[in-house]
Amino acid sequence: MWTSAADRTHHNSTINMALLRNITTIAFALAFGSIAMAQQEVMVSQYMFNGLFINPAYAGSHTYATTSLLHREQWLDVPGAPRTSMLSFDAPLYNNRMGLGVSLVRDEIGVSRDMEVAAQYAYRIKLGDGRLAFGLKAGLSIYSANLNELVYWDENDAVFAQNVNNAMVGKFGFGMYWNNKVSYIGISVPTLFAADDAVAVQGSEGTDGFFTNHFYLNAGKLFHLNENFDLKPSFLVKYELSAPIEADINCNVLYKERFWLGAGYRTGDAIVGIVEYQITPRLRAGYAYDLALNKLRAYTTGSHELMLGFDFGKETIKIKTPRYF
Image (cartoon, rainbow, N blue to C red):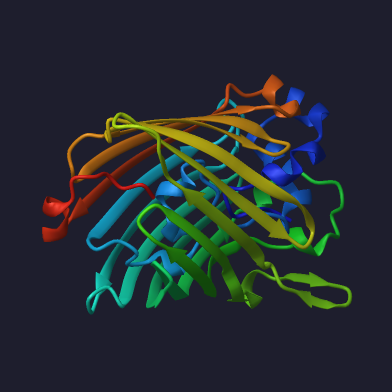
């Protein structure tokens, strides 16, 4: 089987290192076959500034409209490694009681390509000193895989029987998100249900679904240290039934409300460095670098992630403080 998303880090230990020594793009794609049913959702290191990609309830969580453009090159120098591009837009409606969002994700790995467009809707209620949102996601994924480019040993394996060409997959997700001015917590299942018969695995005992449920829990809080420095720890826990629990643990320092500098650790996978600069009250740019800690570190110089965000609307003119999340 194959993967279709950016987060393959749960199962790096399953990669055959002998294949990697003499790797070609096709052989690399095959090496990823054993982790097909693992992580299929978007994985980014700068998740704390791109909540819409992991939780539909994040839509409209600010008092102004916001956009984000992000590109990730994973495992540089490894042929066939994941490459992901994402674009999002969300805005509040009806005095911030509702929110709407739209996201576009293109993901590549080996011989597979996945393009997903999705809409998010959130409804908010007051809870304590913050707001609790309930979010829904509805999307369409266009999936392709040139399986005839693969080299494999079992010629009778149904997985490789034929190519997948522009298969349409409907996806539906759910999330909850609470936030106030300095903290947030969210839980979500980005793909609660997928109409994936077109790409499901045909087995001897029937048809197994391709896309599986992934559960996310993330939270963060800002601490004002003094007039120049703020501290923001955050975490993201990811769980899927057939994979170990994985956690991203991060801590960012904000200097003079313009410059973010942070570091993180992804369990069993990598350490992460993050830098972000608030160029203007509306425009921000970010970069993240992942240094592999597993066996892949001998074959890659790391993963790179670039982000550009723009906020707009009358409210942004009034805001003197930057976006904290």
